[in-house]
Length: 112
Length: 107
Image (cartoon, rainbow over all chains, first blue to last red):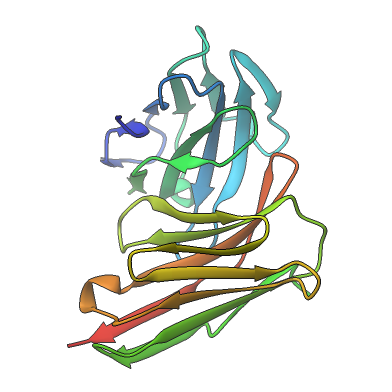
């Protein structure tokens, strides 16, 4: 069974440019999470979806970050415009209901 | 005080040694997770525990709900075990993360 798939694995952009990350969860998992992980720190939840509904986006900086999960399967996280401080690893995870979360490999973003 | 505390923060050992990483938590939980993260890599879930003990290969995880404490053990450690090991607890859908233990196994 395929795990959580994320792309790209690495992305380098200049500040003020837009960037998008894609996540395909494990088949059948209705809950999808986007996390941000700064170097040496634990992941911080940005947004949680149950099916296509964003049920917790309280930590998502909505001035520049947006996310969608239109059909309740794969999801896209976008940053526009990117800032230097956005350099981090963006992790996607999925679970069946709110049980054990399975993580993708992450996207390492570098903003120059 | 952090809700999830791990010790030690850093651990360096020789290949073959028995490794123990500890995790204490101060909140009510529905489950405790041990996860592994290699440098530049994603997070891999090793165990999810709500009671007792689980074993997978050379890895053993135990939890004592009354004492709010869990341990992760690695037997016959190998350099490929070098990674950050993270303890996290589940409250509802939220994961509360420990700071992680950076493990280095020298050949």
